[in-house]
Image (cartoon, rainbow, N blue to C red; front, top):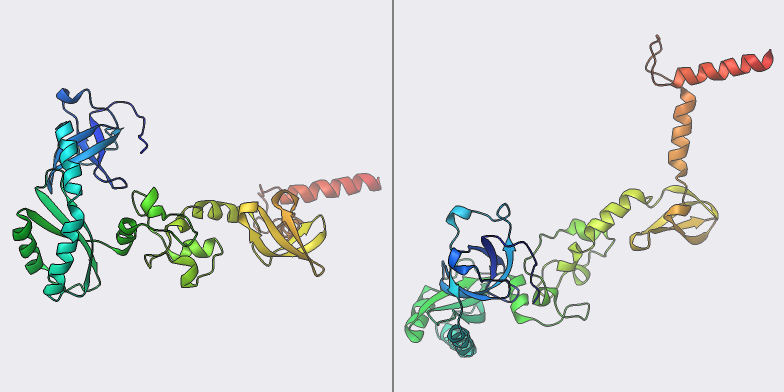
Length: 316
């Protein structure tokens, strides 16, 4: 796990899972020895939790400092051992949850993970369902009595399920969400269109059934490059002659041009924007159309006057 090097401040970012979200907590004067990489005990809405300090947070970047909770203390060896002990019981708890759900005829939910707090005082079951009216209160009560602890049923989305389950993506590599993504970015069809990717579901959806996270990685580069590369159908000048753009190759900073039935790859520095040059030439030859009564400051009339004087001088 990598840690962010930053100037020491009174606010730290703490993570409770390997690829989880970063939460902000205050450092007290008694915690001056806390550094990124240390494990700490903090009080959260879900009880006392054990998390790892990832980085120091600049005060102007910390949100809602007034309501920010303080760090209680650094974790000790006993805390770390307890966390490992309770983690070994999570699989059995998940199996029991699935069995109880089946006995209650709960078929619309998929239970994917059980998670104990470091001291076993809180047990969370992560599940997913498409049935928005599903009632699992009865299941929660039964599990709470069975495990003699406070039980929380947490509804998660398809991307979170894929993150928990792991596995490989369509590219053949381990899923991004299970290896390095800590938060999910908003993704839209527009990103796929900008990159010229086929819009078929097999090409743009991941194992979770949602748009692939990797669509956002190169989107900004494509948008910036397309601003300076000619669009398909444009007439351009090339070392091979005048032709029309048939395809844009953003990552190679080039376009595919058709010249007299043949196709050539032409790079940006070799292109001449013929249509734009012709438009500028036509505008210059038309002169000024806004200041016919005089008072022109655009240079068009002045340019014609200079040309006429030069012609008069040649005649003389």
